[in-house]
Each structure stands twice: as C-alpha cells, then as structure tokens.
Length: 138
Length: 163
Image (cartoon, chains in turn blue, cyan):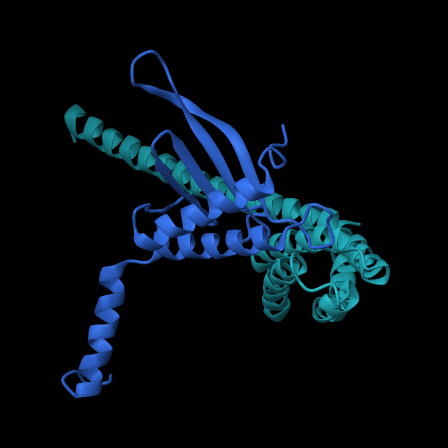
C-alpha cells in the first residue's frame, strides 16, 4: 500500500522540523541501517530515513512505523503508518519545503550515525601536534 | 636362504608395489582435482560471459530512454533511465573486473559513470524548472556516448566467443 499520501503537507513539515530539532539537540540518536539508511526510535514509533534507490542520492524518504505490542509490554513488530518522500519539482504534489527538510534530515542522520567522535578528535589532535612540531610530518 | 627370508623378500615386494599403487592413485586424484578446478573456472567464465551478453544490450535501451527524456524534457523518465544505468554500469563493471584481457580503464569508467548517473538523478529532484532535462543530463549523456563504442565492441567480442 502506498502510504506517501497519508500525511498532509503541514503534518509532514511539522514531523520533519521536529525530528531535525531533536537530531540537532542530540535527543534522538540515529544508527546506520545498511549502506544508505539510518534508523531511530522514540516512544512508540520508529523512524527510518533511506535513499529510495539505495544509492545514497535523492530522492530520500522517511518511513514512520508504530510499535505493535501484545497485551503485556512485549513488542511484536512494527506497522508502517506513513511515508514522507521527496518528489520531483515537476510533480503536481511536489513541495520544495518538504524536499529541503528531508534532504537536510537525511544528511544530518547519515553523518551522525557514521561519525565516530573519538576518531575525529584523534585526527584533530594529531594535526595540531604536527602543526606545533610535536609530531613529525611523516 | 630359508623360507623366512623368502617371505621377507616377498613382503618387501608387496610393500613396494603397494606404495607404487598408492602414489599412482594420489597422482590421479591430484590430476582429477586440477581438471575439476579448470572445469569450474570454465563454467564460471561462461556464466559471466552469458550474463554480460544479456546485460550489455541494455546499455543501448537505457541510452535511448535518456535521450528521449532529454528531448521531451521528461524528468521522471530521465530519473528512471539514470537509476537503470547506474545499476547496469556497476553490475557490468563488477563482472568485467573479474575477466581476463579486459581493459581496466573501461571498468573504472563504468564505475565512475555509475556514480555520475546516481548524482545526476539526485539533482533532477529539485533542480529549478528554468533548467531543462537536456541541460541537466548533458554530462552523463556525453559520458555514456563515449562508452557506447567500447560497450558495442565488447558485446560483439563476447558474442563471437560464444559462437
């Protein structure tokens, strides 16, 4: 079932803006899910950002899934409740703001889920050491 | 020589013959495994060539689709053609990389063009309407035209190998 038309434009913008804010503040943490997808969850929902053609390039999409529970608290699976996808600007349903927000969120989540702070600080420390002359440049 | 000595000599003879037979069997087994390995390699090569013979003609179809999309300023068609081309080029490069006597420059060119096709497809999504599909796909179409001759001759060569 195509769920890309379930959400209103205003709802899409609100969801993407809130997710961006939560990502920037570090409240939500994204993890890599294969080469070109990132996933995070909060409360009863899971969010997956992926490249539609699995090549790391636009169009990107956000899939929103609701956690399904049995009587107790055990999760038995996830059910997709909505999809937000970038559309061609030539498409009647296209929305430049949604496209732009989705692109920014995909890039932020991709960076956040792949970067290792310790590795980056090692590189910066080492370069500073070379600059100060403490570490030989070879 | 008494009977015991004769039996000893006979035992030695049997041992020597036994060793000979064992060595002969080992040589046969080694030869058989070499022949099996060669047969497997031949089959793998044949399968790769068959795969290429199915794959290579798709290049012309995708190229035609992309040219039509450019002429008709159809971004949807261009996008689909570019995704198809990116898959084609990366798959063809992977198969060709494992073949002997293949120009590795062609393999590298296919890999580069695959990435270029994906990136171009990405820009089609929200490029301003003032830029038409012909302009947006100009570089990748030129790159594909440059590869067309190589792909065509490769296809003909593999066809001759099969015939």
